Image 1 (tube, rainbow, N blue to C red):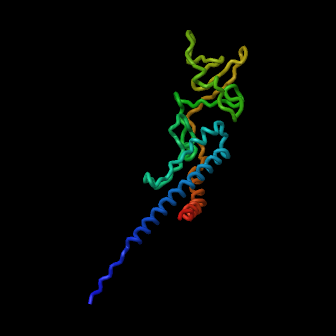
Image 2: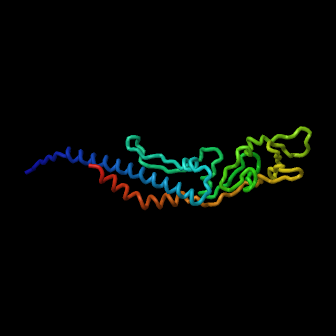
Image 3: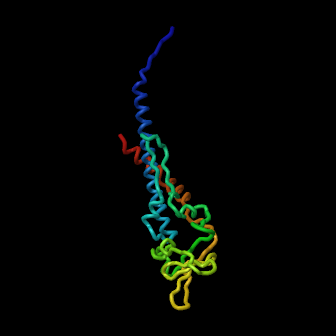
Amino acid sequence: MRIDVKIDTSNLKTRTLREQKRVAYSMSQALNDTALQIQTAQRVNLDKKFTVRKAGFMYRLIKIKFASVPKDLPVAEVYVDNTKQRVLLGLFEDGGEREPAVGQNVAVPITGEAARPSFGQLVQDVFTFQKLKFKRKRGGSGNVLQGQQNTFLVPGVGVFMRTAKKVTELIYTFRRPMKMAKKLGFVDIARQVFAEKFQGNFTNRYNSKP
């Protein structure tokens, strides 16, 4: 004797698909919640470890690419934007080398002098290289370049400013490409926040859905 049994699984499939969709959206939202928490922790870390002179600009360098179910993006990414010109933040993760923008040396403003009166200040606008406009003086000798604001540049040494008759002050010193210290800790912070926050974020998102 053979008994044929037919089971209607359409309702089960519907529930399974609904559950898969629920899990997928909860996962995506939890990833994005955690990414925002990582971003906040990274910005707080900047203030702790660095003297941040342009806070808004520096905070915006830490960006997020959000996960999205409709866009089939199953991961969220928190990263440092290294596309901006002369941005050094990413170099502090692994201790990269700071390369000169022009020539063979890096120009470092002397704190307490005209270009940077205090450590927390940006380089004064009139003392940026763009505004100093260095050029070789007609009839001058050697490699010394004359600039605005009574300045002159000595290759391999730095930039000086005449403050009085026969008195000059060094306002920039030239250094060879410098090795940045490993002090950012971006990856470690991201791992710590993820370990502490993701499971709770997922549970909250999952339980909030019918």
